[in-house]
Length: 305
Image (cartoon, rainbow, N blue to C red):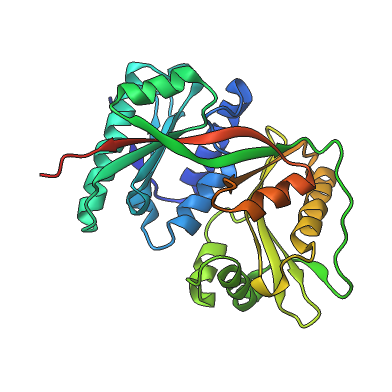
């Protein structure tokens, strides 16, 4: 098997996204992430790391992408995806082994050696789960819920008086850093978030602006025009503005707008399970999202030499 190529440019990302959309069109979304996940995890989740270390892809003799992997040593995890007709083949096995070993090597290079390696499935295809277990991995738990909205019946929701929607731009970095920090963990400055926002193939970031000018809620939205879907990733509400229906109104606004502008037929959001974050699941259910898949975690314990 040829060695994969490391990410070098925005064109690599776009080619990977197009391949992923085409695979989903061919085989469905079982065990395929949304193309927006690739960009989000590469530049947001991995914001402190070099994209060339994280993203690698394989090509066939015609130069077509046949597989790619994202390596996350900081999460002890790798995500490998191959073309539908190559699943469970020798290529898939060799790509899986390469991904596992290079995740371990990557962790050593950054002086954070791993005690275990995590691989995940959507729990939607027993054969895929068996493939992972045959590589020495053991099921441990469900971690996330994949929920979907078919957009046929979008509920009505309005913002509180004085609030309004806004398409974020590069001029909004201070406010964007503030709403991200106060929705989740405090890790962003305007400069650091600016590198994420201005990385290749940024799409939509919608915000709700409060009467005092602060950003009360935000979401990033990614569009798959081949499969007519959108992904919400992430969705957050500033801690000072929660329980006022703002996030619900924002998601309703986005779904209607994407349906009108892109002909979107369904929306996706990942969220934590109720025992870890009951509010997120309740929000998405109130908007009309329904569970489709459960992310399943499989772990291989490493022998420390």
